[in-house]
Length: 261
Ligand code: CO8
Image 1 (cartoon, protein in one colour):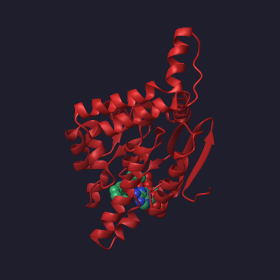
Image 2 (cartoon, rainbow, N blue to C red):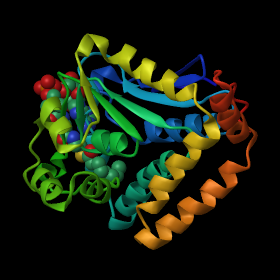
Image 3 (spheres, rainbow, N blue to C red):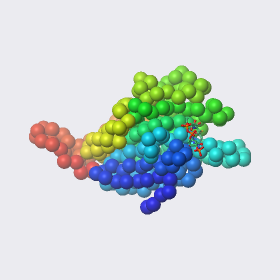
C-alpha cells in the first residue's frame, strides 16, 4: 500500500511508520490521521509484525501538533467535536492493537504530536527533543486524549501545569517526569528504537499482547477488577504452547523457541 503523508517499512518483524510532512514539521492533518489508521489496521492482522516504531521524518520534529490551518477552518462545534473523536479513535486503535508501539521522538512533540506519542506504549526521545501541549496558547485544549493520558502518565498536577502553561519541556525533564521512558543522543535514536523493538519482537507475542492489554484496560478498572482481568489473561496464557515451551526450555537449560501459539 502506498501513502502520501507517511512511510511504512518492514524489517525483521518490526514495522516502522514515519510521519512524512517535514516542511510542516510533520503536523498531523486529517489525511495523515486517516493514513495512520489505515496502516495500523493493516498491520494489526499481520502476524509477521511483532512491534511497531512510530517516528517523524527529518531532524526537527516528531510532530508539531494537529494541523493548525485545518483547526482554523472549523465551522461548528459539531465538526470540531467530530475531528477530536476521529483523532481519539486513532488513539484507541493504537491502544487496542496487539503489537506494542514505540514512539521514537526525534524532535518537537507538541500538541497532537505529543498526544500521538502518549497513545504509544513506550516513548524513547532524542536528547534534543522538546515536548509540550501548547493548545491553551491557541484558545483550545488537548482534544486528542491529552488531558486524559497525560494526567494518567505523570499525575494530574504536573499534567495541569504543562497544559495550563503550554510550556515546552526538554527531553531530560520529560524523562524525570516519566513522560518518556528513555533518552538517547539524537544520532542514536533510530538504532535505539530498532534495538528495543527487536528485543520485544523476539519474545512470545501472546505474552506481549496480554501485558499491553492488562495494563491499558486495567488503568480503567478498580484494583480488584484489574487483578481479576490479569488472572484471566494469565489463565489463558498458561495454556499456550509458548508457555509450555518457555517453562520447559528453562528447566532444560536451553533457549526457548517461540511459536506465537
Ligand atoms: N500546523 C501546521 N503547520 C505547522 C505546525 C502545525 N501544528 N507547526 C509548524 N508548522 C509549520 C509552520 O507554519 C511553518 O510553515 P511555513 O514554513 O510554511 O511558514 C513550518 O511548519 C516550520 O515552522 P516554524 O517556521 O514555525 O518553525 P520554528 O522553528 O520557528 O518553530 C515550532 C517551531 C516551535 C514547533 C513552531 O512551529 C510551533 O510553535 N508550531 C506549532 C506548535 C503547536 O501549537 N502545536 C499544537 C497544535 S494544536 C493541536 O495539536 C491540537 C490537538 C488536539 C486537536 C484534536 C482534534 C484534531
